[in-house]
Image 1 (cartoon, rainbow, N blue to C red):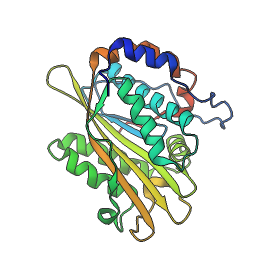
Image 2 (cartoon, one colour):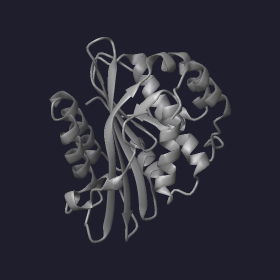
Image 3 (tube, rainbow, N blue to C red):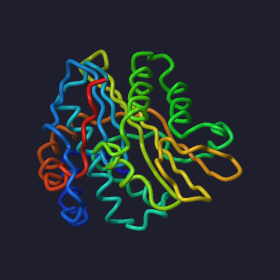
Image 4 (cartoon, rainbow, N blue to C red):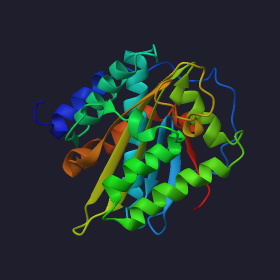
Length: 257
């Protein structure tokens, strides 16, 4: 992978292709405009990504992370419109993030179905998060509370409708769980967990689908992510402009946790 610079990121954004605007989707009432607030824990659904922010991550960076996630997903949708080609979709998704200055140490998927046998998908996510975030109990608690809150919500709520629409197709699904937490020197860290799900039967609600190792394949790719702040600051406004026609249809804030 070549070194990403502000110039290369601008060039990439000039050429990246996105699908046509989603004006054909049924209108969903998403409530008030999202207020990115550094003074509290927050969570939101960005298409097939559940994104959480620990108190202390700046409002500007919160918006940057959500915008980068949405851009990467839209570009992957354009390049790989067949959602059953999950690994190809993720390859395109990770490629976009790298070109925006995100540095992912490992993008390889490995089977997780043995570990998740008998669990619902959200319980499998918590097991992965516990390994990654064990030394950071506040961050782990936020992931857990976000998933538990989604389970207790009306399945017709906008964030559930949006997540299910973007994450699954028939008997396959892909979804991400991302968490940003503040660092010590005005920086921040992102933990990313990406999952693929293939079942013999048609999937219903993805997060609460029961994993049976003989009937369901679950794979996971997860790790810490660093972001080139210089690159991100240089392309912030360009990313906003690129996705402005899509944000209302693809981003929904969860209620305060």
